[in-house]
Length: 187
Image 1 (spheres, rainbow, N blue to C red):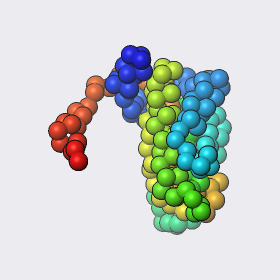
Image 2 (cartoon, helix red, strand yellow):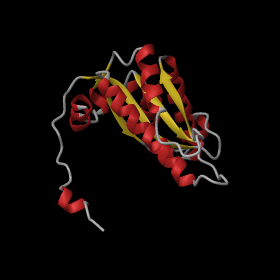
Image 3 (cartoon, helix red, strand yellow):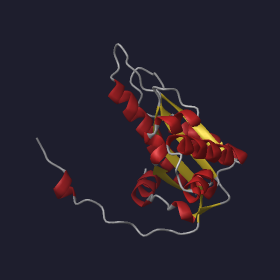
Image 4 (spheres, rainbow, N blue to C red):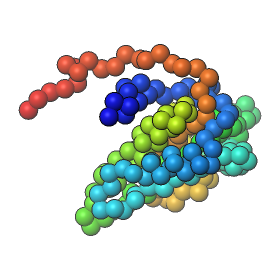
């Protein structure tokens, strides 16, 4: 499958500042989400879900994050609040991959979390295959319970990543990759 190998060997994360409209169409987004959900999933638990931030939803999410930040830090600078209000407005589309990993009689939580991470990677690959730029970031809402609640997550849910998508205005040069001799051992 040379096309698949070429895609995997050339895919690069885009910089958020380089992602502009148009973002994925509704049909392309359905394809991306469908492929994101085709990941290893021990026990067929689907231990993840997706939150799509598009259109006005991006501004509503920004307002929710600004309110959560203000609640946790009443002295927060106005500039920082404005940055939060525009967080998801920087690109046409953002998808949060939410890990719903929970204790299970048979399936370790860690495996469930890794399945959510695999969703993020599949999303990046699918977006690239469709000609879009994308990047996977966590950012502070991933680590803040108030921010997660403001975005509609339950107490046990965690953000595996935010996938920012749009049309890339810059093609980035490849970055240095690890020397296999430095990262591979044989037992």
